[in-house]
Length: 311
Length: 88
Image (cartoon, rainbow over all chains, first blue to last red; front, side, top):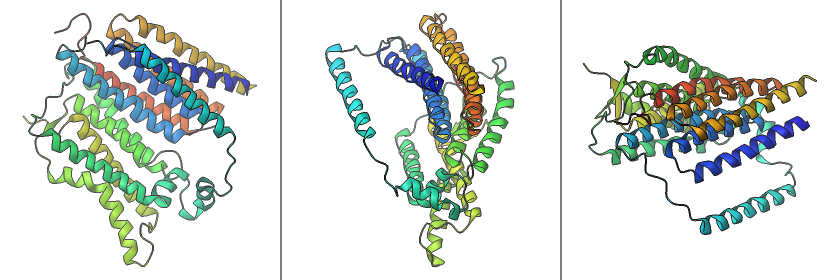
């Protein structure tokens, strides 16, 4: 496996080099582009480490959505004439000792991790042993929905709080100030009609295979967000000033579905958060995917709601 | 034997990625840098597809699929960015 080691060393070196460039760079757009590449290489590293679930999430959120978000921010800066502002001056006297100390810390943690023995009945091993009882084939989905269901439900609550917080600070900001792509630009509308349906297909695929293979509500939600971002960017859907009932219902769908099914187990005399069957898994996953996608798209568009273009 | 060939292919593609870094550093326009990103995206897809075969992990093909999709979003977010030459 020497060639594997070579691949790993190449990946590790380019990651360190890229991050150094991103942090110390002086041109805003160049650093931004390098950051997107950093996300790509991180996803490759996860793939190399045999963690396709994380690679999926990193590809969707780290490289794709964050990249689009930063490009939009750059566009606003450039439109305001602020993109030429050079990043804060470096302070080598401060930076070098900090870098050295951080390096020593990483080395110490790495070296001490070498000596740690494998605990025989660690949580991961137990999950793999008990997985067949859940009817799920993907241990990650098993942990997220069955073994640590409460944590996942609270994650949905965190997402909801983030949305409410954004709505609170949004104030009376005029919706639709987003710098949009002109749909008259050649190929944009053709691209949209091709890519948007495909994203829906991929999101559904990820949701359905998530029970048995890498995928699941979070990855599917991120992909669906990609579709939403496409629609927002091209102005196909436009920000609205007030959220309607549908928006509010979709925003709480994930949390509500999880909580209702989890608590209803009590009424049936079972432990709370017990899922009654595979239908519950699919229901919760679908609701979570919709909530995640809606929340992230609204956050991206800085708006309370989205609706078709009004003529 | 196949494993070695696939591994060498991955190394070759990774070196290609690093060569693409030069274009990002050199520029000179934002469009040049963005094209380098898209080149990176395509090469990453190739690396993932080879890794899927090499490591016997079919799920990596889904990751590759996602990269193709997300490249279009990043491109769209870039389209219309005021370029270095003609700033409004």
